[in-house]
Length: 107
Image (cartoon, rainbow, N blue to C red; front, top):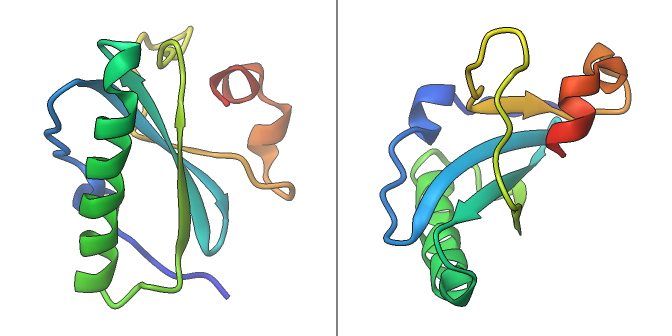
């Protein structure tokens, strides 16, 4: 079962201490938010605010069954060809992206 959450609804997270973020779809009903912070000491506060905002967003869309987690990374990597940082990447076992070096490095 795949649930649909429009990418535009995932934009615009404004959290103090959060430098950059990216969503990694891990299955049809789950995702992981990769988060880059300005300061390691702020990660607990940033994570709490991310969970609060994402839970609210999912509840507003009646998608409470969607599972998500937050993982802090040193930096969100840009695509080596375009120089852009995609908002959403996929890491699903049955997807072609698993063979793509950029997507393996991003997760």
